[in-house]
Length: 78
Image (cartoon, rainbow, N blue to C red; front, side, top):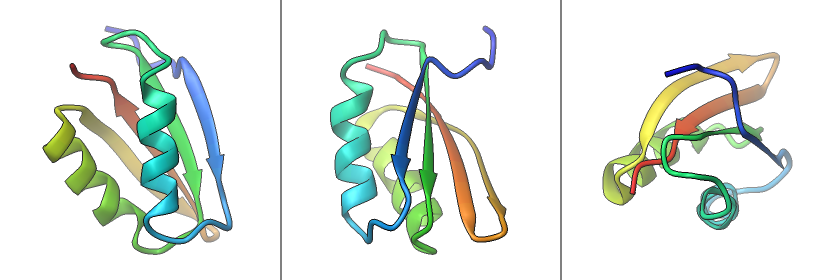
């Protein structure tokens, strides 16, 4: 399966739990197996998205922090 994002959500400047809540809404608009990339600045985002993926059945592909901008890539599960 390719690793090209199918959706992009800019959640920079939002604090927990808003990035995850916005991602939950956005991920519903993409197909199962498609990917969503989230840009966040909340330092808690990587842990929050890991918990979200574990709970919701999605796959956390990657989480990278570059100069305070965290790029999180998820693959939609169910």
